[in-house]
Length: 338
Image (cartoon, rainbow, N blue to C red; front, side, top):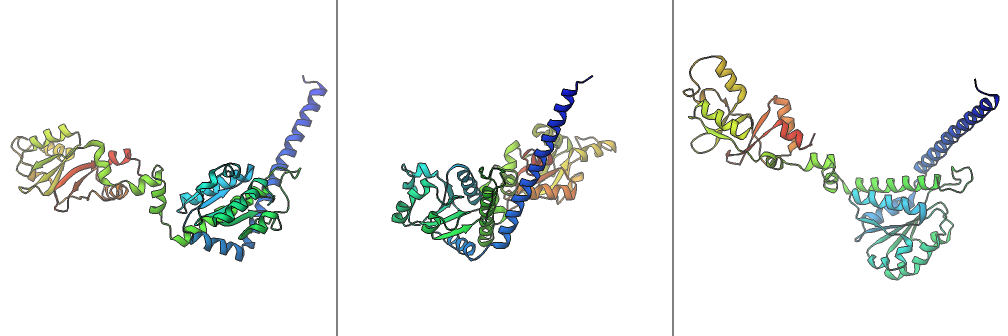
């Protein structure tokens, strides 16, 4: 049986947990409210910044220090991944040589909650001499940094969600949201498509889906099983077994695709117990004029064709209908383009 002291201690711990949960909910409400107000208050300065970045001949350099530096790094990554060449440089490192990467065609986008960040302020004279533009994201539009900027994007944050008012919370959330808003607005201006996005993310699932072609999938097996219309089913079976494809293209005397024969076709022929496989010819069993695709077709489209037509094998042909190879359903799944 627990002692009274243990019961009291448990009650205190439960009370602390309840207070902690209440605090976490309050933090989310405060930050959500700040972002919501920001959405309603986007003004002409935001539009000017949008136009300036859209027309920039160089790149967008994001800079900041501490938590604001982390937000700047993320904004740079988002801009770059959506078609706006951007990079991050720590303000302190910029003071010690990294500023040499900046040109007069670039734009500096500085993130500073206070607008008084010493390292960024020390960059201003050099930035002015280089001729780069300066946009500041800050919660203090009356700050020293804001006075030096070409454009100021005010996050409109009046208080932090931190109960001590010290840890950057609401301010960093608002700055990040404002950076995302800029990046997404730029994608709209640039007309960014899913294919463009995939080009910037070739290693992701979207990249595989939108960049992988049938020709890429052919490389998985490197097989191109073929038989002539006049070959026997037995010969076709040998070709299919050797290629381990479960099917083979059927070609005419000129090498053009005229049909396809699968292991299912052969099983059905055997079940009829008509004549020997060594005497029955391919043209009697094959599927005439089968579905076929070109090598430059997206693999995802080939997969869709196979699903819609309920087929497991798909010949790949040239412009003159000569077989280049055969892809099957498993190869497409293995390429992870679904």
